[in-house]
Image (cartoon, rainbow, N blue to C red):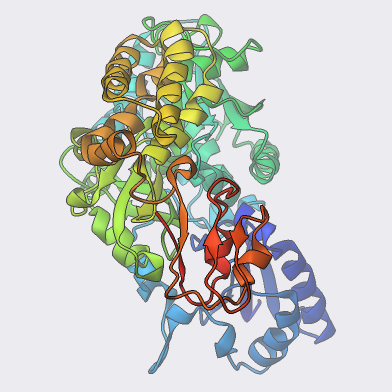
Length: 595
């Protein structure tokens, strides 16, 4: 029996910050100080506060160390683990108060969260099946196979109100019901782990921190619809998630929780991995299935829908990682428990990857109906450097921008759609007053153009024409007729594209046109970027009254565009200026501004 457990984050963010070296040094130091029989070191998944990694939590006192360095380990071991004295200066500062150290759950980042999909992330070792079982893992599968009929399982999901967490929000129970109703000699269960939105890492974190929850939920799905084979489609750029999935599948097979005659009930179900090459379009369900079949990942017309004719032409259900992560808890706690969280039409919780201009970058899980203001100002800690909130992008390239006027909107599927955005997979990127909304729309459209599979003309050609117009606008070369043409193209592409990629590609443009049209018009009519972002419309100016002639700007100008002698006001040669901003960054007197 260990008296202390040290949990070290082994998610991608902390791994990139050096957590494997932390773990290695920690084990060495614990052994050196003779504590190997008293202190256990456990590698976990993501704790959520990704910007603070590497993260280490010492139990039973739950001391939360952040941004730990290898050189900090000897002190933590000798002071905290050996002598019981917490190293306060290394703790996450939000847990340190004048009255002492408070629990992590009481910090602003955590206290409004409610973890269902993420309940085991940062708590268990994802590579040890016994730890998952110790938290109630596979109990839901056992209950389903021994106490419930397939129709019972589907009814529980229908009563819970669980909607797909991957984009459109289709009712999960209804999807399963449709697949069960189709008779076939073979059916399939698929998991979409091909998370491709810029700034999104929700599904990756679940796979890295709690892979067995997905395996258990897929087995439950197989029982409910009458399938004996599942596939997890995960992008190869997620090496940690892939490794832990492989370990989890092997362990589940060894424990007879996957394979033949599970729990001695005669139910057979197994799961295989398929690695994607990173094509964004393969997040669309029919393109994903085409890719699993070994073909080029392109979407197919619907109908028929996958529940009727999906993978290999057989009835198939496809849900994403987060959707599956909710299912075992719904089975164990009942549909009423899940439906008690959230709003009338959007039940439960939602995981968001919070990024951009925000203090607390990381992973959060909140009840549906939590307002955008609560997420950004309370959980996220607000906008850095005293800047004003301008907009939040939800749903990635498929979503839209939520402006400050909707800062108090409760976040759920229907509310976001009503204001021109969407839930999507759960990326939430925060922007401040220094962001240009035309440039933001251009950024997302550049991504969509690169990721279009090219199968249908509206998406292949139309998005490229949209990008050309946006580029003209950011260069100050567009006319108001171009703006009208851009809007017309948006609706044409939205209504005529084959799959969800093309149908949602115009969303960032339409939402920014809706709420920030004045910025578009400033670029066109005044040849001015109000946020000072679009380089072609920028000019740098030296205020002669503030300039001290220190020559620092001239010495740091890569283009030699600044002229002037020592102790005399300088000027910028606009013909030579490459608009890099180095001069303004280096000026100590605030004499240089951009216009």
